[in-house]
Image 1 (spheres, rainbow, N blue to C red):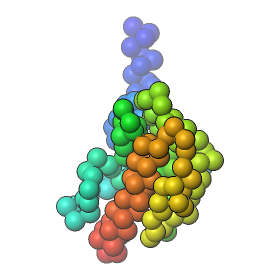
Image 2 (image 1 turned 90 degrees about the vertical axis):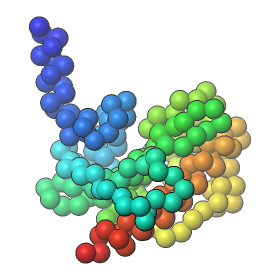
Image 3 (image 1 turned 135 degrees about the horizontal axis):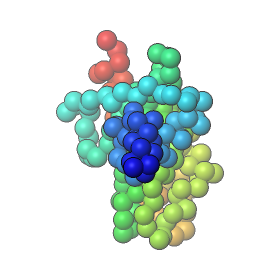
Image 4 (image 1 turned 180 degrees about the vertical axis):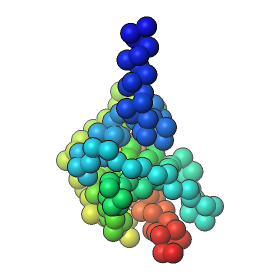
Length: 172
């Protein structure tokens, strides 16, 4: 009986995140939001994307993150395929739609995990209305070429999608 009560209380305490994000990612996503925007009880709202914003991929979700009814930014959750396995990552955009944070949430493969490094991911910070090419503006990583290209292409695509969302959804 005690075990059931503890699980129930934990589920209630995390319900805003658990309801919106896949269970295996929710705890880490919550920590990224809390650390990046210094919020303890974020208000998170999924933003529906219409067909106009879907480009090459459709395996992403966008969320508006607020605290005390003040917009902190936007969370773009997606995944990409490395050489063997998919990995999940999040891109946090500030209210001006600039990249504020990129973090690999779950990397499943034995190889290529170097793309999760904070120093490597810093190369994407501040991007807005631009693209960067892996191996040119984005430093290549030996042993993580496929994952590095995949996340770089995904981030470039996220900027395009967020720009379209901004123009279609947030200009009303």
